[in-house]
Length: 207
Image 1 (tube, helix red, strand yellow):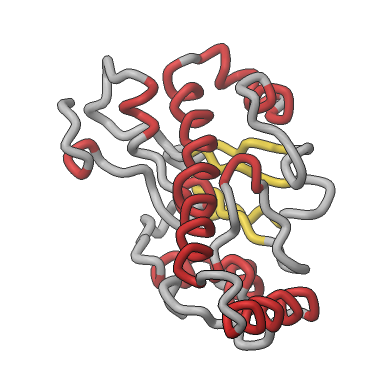
Image 2 (cartoon, rainbow, N blue to C red):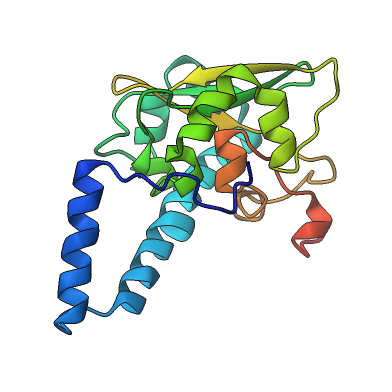
């Protein structure tokens, strides 16, 4: 399995109807597929994930906020004005030296849109939804993330009632960084658990 490919060739009924409607409107010249792609990309990779990245950066910078996030993620996240449909009930899980957290939704594709934006295609794909539970270490390796053999991997199954945000470990060499700089180190995949936070040299920011 590779996270760069769409593994789910069978659309659910709602998605199939949306795809059919999009095709009809495109053929009639009423919509521009390129414009739709830009809008989707904005919500999938820019607006949503940046909200979550700011939450993580604040937790890294402010111990009191990090404690609040552990105890009541819903309220802590809402305090930054990030709330809405599919993000009402949240739990933050913190990566440590001993444990790495991974989020999946085994039944469908429950996902905190208000914090992470639109879910990536691979998150909704049956291979990820099934294998993340059965062989999480193998799945992470296919994402390019090889963890030490002695590090525990804990898998959290997102539901309609509760969604999860992974707080990755803060990279070394970021002492004195602003929250804005720190947020640049946090990717969507790191907040799902399929990646780590970026190292400082990958951003061009001064350490």
